Length: 353
Image (cartoon, rainbow, N blue to C red; front, side, top):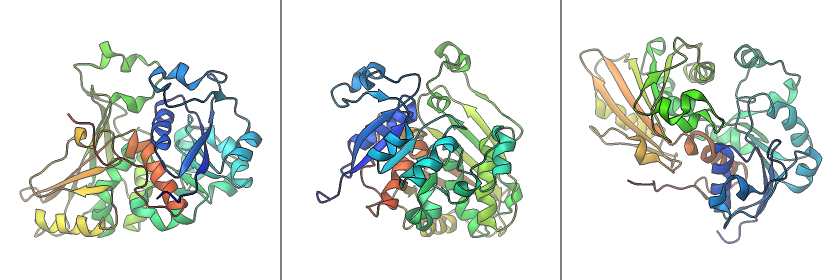
C-alpha cells in the first residue's frame, strides 16, 4: 500500500482517551499524516506534556481551535469532544470541504428532537445534521462510503447492535423481548476526575448505573433497532461498571420466533450476515467471548447460545470500548470514505495476556 496518498488529518480534542487512541492508531496508518492536534484547556502545551510516554513518536503541540486554520490544513477532521460542541464546528468544516468524523453523540440521531430530549441542548444545524451517516460500517457501509459527515456510534451501542442486528434484520426474535445486559471498563467514563472512577471506589466492586432506560445510549440503540426491524422497537438496556480499564461485554437476550432454531442455525445466520465484515468474529458453538481477546484491537467477538427451556437466544459481544467502540471504528469509517481497504491501519492482534 506504499502508493497511498498521505491525507492530512486533524484531531480536535486530542487530550482525552478517544483522542490519544486516534493519535496512536493514525500515527501507524500508512494513508494519513496527523498535522493538527487541537484543544481548549490544553492549547499551547506539547502533546508529550500530556502523554510523556509518546514523546518519542509524537512531536506536535496542542493548538487553539480555529476552524479556518483547521480547514485550510486538514482534509479530514476527527472531533473527539464532549457532547454539544461538535455541532458548533462540523457545519463550517463540512462547508469548507473537510470530511468530518464526530465521536460524540451530536450526529448520531436522525431526529434532533430525540437528541435534545436526551442531551438537553437545542440545535440550529438541521440541514447539515440531515446529511450525517451513522458510522457503524457493518450496517451502513455503502452510505458511509458516500458521506462527508459521520456520527460515530457510542461504545455500548456498538457492542449491543453487533449482537442484535442479525436477529432483528432477519426477523428471528420478538423485538420487544430484547434485553441488553452490558458491562464496561472504567475508561468508558473518560479522563476527567470522577469520584466513582477512583481506584478506591471502583476496584473490588461491581455495580449497575442508569438503570430503567435512563442511559443516553438507550435511544441510540433503539433508533438502529427500529431501522433494522422496520418498526419502532423498545429495548431494555442496563449498563454496569467493571473494575478494569478497557473492554465491553454485552450479553443480549431475546425470545425466538421459531422455537425450532438451534445454536448452529444461528451461528450460520450470523456468519452469513457478517460475511463481508472483517472485524467481526463469530465464534464456534460453546465458545464465549472475553473482553481481553479484543483488547487493543478493532475486533468484535460474538458468541451465541440457545436456551430451549425458555426459547431464548443469548448473544455475547465483546469489544475494546476505546477502539471498536470509539477511535478504531472512526478510522474504519475513514477507510471506507477514502476508498481504502477497510482494515487499513487497524490492529487485529490483541494485547495478551
